[in-house]
Length: 237
Image (tube, helix red, strand yellow):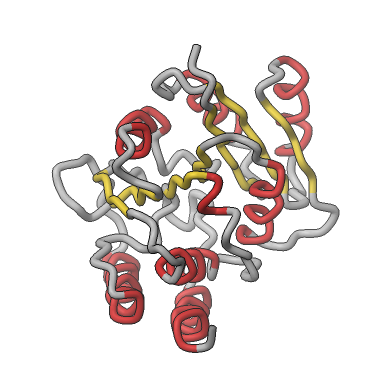
């Protein structure tokens, strides 16, 4: 087996209906021979998420559960997970089944080939299955990506994507400050400013989005916070 490894960081908050299934899919995913380390950060869930993860962590040594005593947000959960990650590569995985772990292999390939330092999974690059949902939400995502690109001088098609994969030595050069969904524009801005700039690739991915009735958490306030973060982390360094 490869001596290289992959840490999958999964932030969780009230995902009792999906967390067991997503962990099972992560464990079965093709990681191209990398040793697997799964770090699940429970952000003070009020349902049975934490107890369910504790049970599956007891049964598989590849799974680690880290718990927050207060709800802090996705960015804070990722900050906690990144601090625990010791693998060569680190990928973010949401717990809500919107993103498919079966696509790990194509996300990892540019990194393992030595072509990339960071890989973004794009929901909008075409040619992949995508659930049709909210027009204004999709438009907002594209507008935020465009605004981010203006300041970072990158030509990303999906800055807000969950699927971001990093070489750990690259991620260690960045300090995450945002506690909620502002993480996405913050990490993009800070990665783009590293010297020398990392080699960033994009890979098309599928997307099975949720409705708000199904548990989607991001809202319009997060969109305004994203604009603030784009300006803050690009203009005020």
